[in-house]
Image (tube, rainbow, N blue to C red):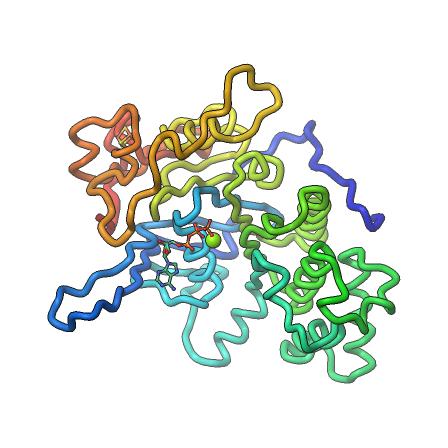
Length: 351
Ligand SMILES: Nc1ncnc2c1ncn2[C@@H]1O[C@H](COP(=O)(O)OP(=O)(O)OP(=O)(O)O)[C@@H](O)[C@H]1O
Ligand code: SF4
Ligand SMILES: [Mg+2]
């Protein structure tokens, strides 16, 4: 592969959601962040950041988690990375509940790595590239000597197309462009030799001209290492390009999911339809409808009752204010939580 990635997904190959056993699975995750007010006698309030979210990641497949700012995407990723403890719900790795304790956490972190949105703050400005790559190699036991660590660091730089690798090894973050820093951050995640990569908006802070290169790099690494990838984005068009499966999240609740092409070509949930209407599309004949034209995402301290989308939904019915719809199976790996498609399976927890 050349330094400018040019390998796009093959449009001839239909992508489907498969029933292979997941490597990482989240079941009914919920996260409340307590709000500490000035009055110790007042009722404890909380940000209801994530309610009843389930997802599964399998080897060699990418799942996109899409939603507006504040919808809870990063909170889900941080729970999966075990940077936040879920308020309730369960995380299974290779079919087993994740264990607590230092050794278990280290083993988990070796297998489940995260790439953050901001390549400027995710690297330590006082250390060179060699340090960023050799440290995880040593910590996770993949290199036992300096020479071995350097050889592997050079190989990692080649894998992320930072060549000549010898020249990049001694550079500091401030000597790199945004795209080069994100490649170093990706190489650092790979140094652990993970099976799962959680990529939280990995291109949104990069120059538009290099976003596709970084997405194609991640796709190539996913295929080469059979990584299970969670790709977080607010850009539904990039979800279709990148991911086999797309989940749509609104105000802390997942509202629709299924194979990316189907979800984006024929969105079922009114929020997904709104997101698609607001996405730039060169083939569109009518005007772009900005998301803000249909109201803002609600406060998650006192979220709307029932379906949290009801204040913005053109199809809202009285029942939508009363309770959150369960998940309705639409066939073909697709599902949605919306009373337009029935009551669905009863939801667990949540408001
Ligand atoms: N550590 C925290 N303490 C309190 N509230 C938090 C914390 N982290 C996130 N939140 C709140 O939880 C909600 C979900 O935030 P989150 O960062 O997960 O959203 P997001 O979908 O990743 O948004 P963005 O697209 O802007 O990154 C927001 O209301 C946010 O303010
Ligand atoms: S459940 Fe009701 S308010 Fe929510 S998206 Fe469906 S129709 Fe709209
Ligand atoms: Mg985020």
